[in-house]
Picture 1 (cartoon, rainbow, N blue to C red):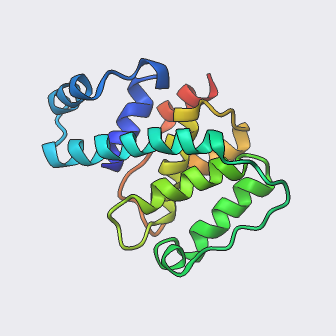
Picture 2 (cartoon, rainbow, N blue to C red):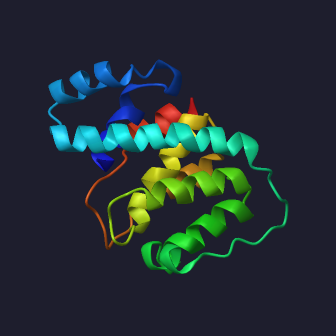
Picture 3 (cartoon, helix red, strand yellow):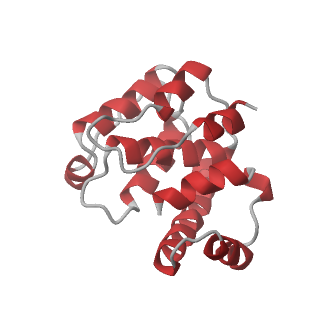
Length: 162
């Protein structure tokens, strides 16, 4: 499913992404499996729901995020620290942080790796058309040495910087 998200970054602007039925056909033609396509479309649908919640959720400056037990189990310290890093460097605000956490927890993984979290951050930024500093973007595109099951690539950087 993560590979599909990277494919979307590289091939579509958020506003130009086709409707789900058309997108499913295009993804199938690109060689993705039907189970992965279904999971990705469901995940993207949840992202649209997060967007609606983001509009209603007030940003509380200086607030501290307390992770519950499930969040701590599924988001290891490296992921939680990275989210804090993004907030401290004004790359994300509190509602965007919550959208990122919500989408990370929507993955079927028992534990979300840092590299997967970075792709989720990219997906949320991509969907909301949120501007991000080039140095932060570079950090998002850097792969964790322990988990190299995918790579976002230079095309994603080019798309997000334009």
